[in-house]
Amino acid sequence: MPWSGADEYKGDLSAWSGGEFPPDVGLQAKIISGGSAGDHTVSGVRENDDLVAVFYHAPAGPALTDITSEFEGTGKGIVADDTINNTGGTDTSGGTLVVLWAARNEPVA
Image (cartoon, rainbow, N blue to C red):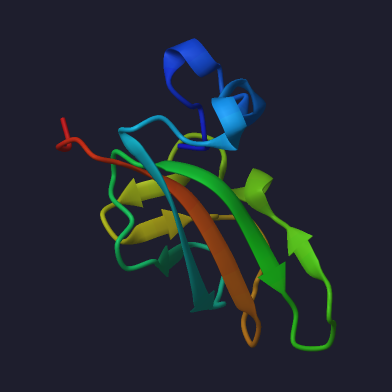
C-alpha cells in the first residue's frame, strides 16, 4: 500500500514537526536490482509497512524516474514481507530501483 501516513497526518509529511516521522515510524531505503514488472524482493520491508516511493535508474541514464504510481492499486505495492509488486508496470531489467518505505514498529495484523 502506498504511503498513507498515520490518520492524523493524512500522508502529508510536512505536517510533522521538523519533517520527522512519528515515533512508531522509521524511514527505510534499499537499492535493489531491477527486473521484469511484477514481484521485486526488498529485504526488510514488511506487509504492514507503507511504501513511500520507488525510483528507477535506467542503465543508460543518470536520472532517476519516479515509478511509485506503478506500485499503487489492488494487488500491488507491498504485497508480502520482503516483496513489492508493479504488475503491468515498467520492465526495469538491467537497472536499479531505489525503494523508500515507512517501517512501522508494530506487529502485522
